[in-house]
Image 1 (cartoon, rainbow, N blue to C red):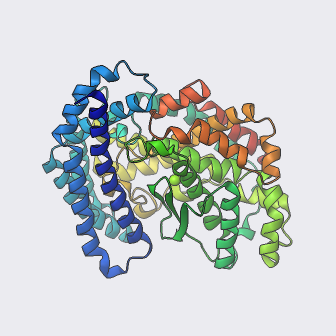
Image 2 (tube, rainbow, N blue to C red):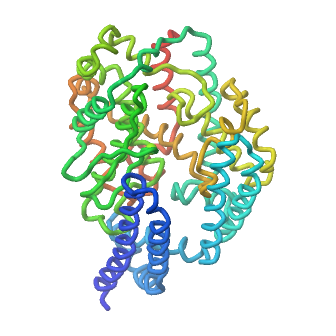
Length: 502
Ligand code: MG
């Protein structure tokens, strides 16, 4: 076979794996949106069969041989070319897939499905004891998992790497250590100040009108309805079946405006990323977002830097008032702006505001690392949780349901995931800072409800690359430094300094 033929063969093989993953994604999307309850058992079997087939295909020895054959040639290609990156990323994924034995995957799947059920019950009863033995098993499995990738610098590295390729535990610790004191200081400064009123957000708002307003906003953002759709689900998410078929879901509360409004913008940010990946990367391991943190940098950018800005509401607030005249007719723009940006330390991560959110993440990262290192025992988690919440946020849960049991992630075996949320916040501010240099009248454009240039910038610098570059590398290429907390902290202090008169 010629090198061209080998590359073509490699692409054919990874495309089949890709197609299986996309087919599974369609089934999962349906499961979360339209599937009737009794469909669950059969759907579980279908998904399990497809993921088994995908794993078999992804670990096909022919892929390994083609990668070996292509390696000396790939070393001579332009390292930034699609082909060189395809070989690099496929190699990385092939090694990951082949290092983990199929027995381990099956065992983990069994343990986590039991753990998920136990977690639901434990959370409902606010009783960590019911979940504790399951979590202990998961932690033991994660330690075992890390050993498949030994030697490593830190036992947590292989877990983190599944979500943020190339990022090390030491990187995240360094970033968070710089961030933590500044975040705590900001939250403490805000706590000394009077609170803006946000009661107007908590009243009955017609659900269909909320939906329609959200549609109007994300259409203005650039969501392409010929290549995507929006549906409802209990937990909003984004999924992509191809670059021309990206699905988002939203959840609308009849008595609170914030959930639907900002949730819709958030998922649209994820969708715009997937819709912007270069079509030539389709059906390869490069054909999706670079990592969860880069993804979250997109969702957070549209939700917060755009959607919670004064400029945005200068354009859209009159429309919102027209939509809800009885609820908002007497609430002026400034009151609305301050209300949607109210900072209040709370117990629940998913309800946290921009200023306190990252502290919830740091707490979880420290606990995960402690569990893996063995410096924190599973049985001590509720107590450690309470102590750290008091230290960082000044509040402590009265029971495990609003403390250590609140998130689903650990029960699903997703350890290594949480830091991506906070990193996404930091990166969103880095993009923004660079964008303000490149588009001097960015704010004026937003004030006019124009988002075309903003989206073009994101497409050109971030979206089109798909997963060609690792997250740190991508940030470095675009802004000239690695992941850095300073732009985000400057943004928070400027915004909340003004709102709270700090
Ligand atoms: Mg998200």
